[in-house]
Length: 133
Image 1: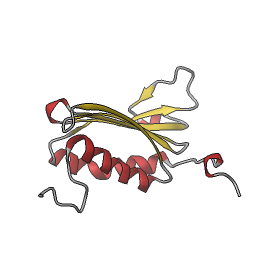
Image 2: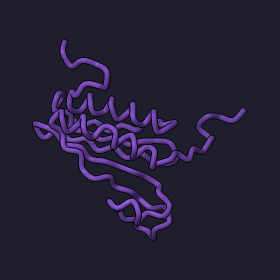
Image 3: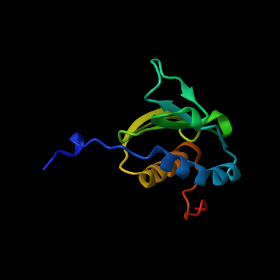
Image 4: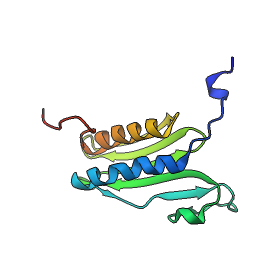
């Protein structure tokens, strides 16, 4: 049996981008501004530039997004096809910078992780949950 950390993942970043797209309307309705997706191409020469146009990326290695909200709150999340996500946010609710890395096993898990980060950074309730106390 292989150690779980030794199993290399190859997440479908286009599916992860679809998870982001499925949330944009809710974010906008909640007063947030979601920037363009940024893609990094593994096949590009070093240093690999970030591209906003997916068609310019031959071999996607990561996809990321930056979301801003009231009171200078900001969230940046990058998913790497190897199965982890890096998140940095300035939480308006806590007035502190948070940096985390999370294990991600699928695009769906990434979507759930996004919901959690948006809740923690901006207080925007997760889908299906009421924001009322």
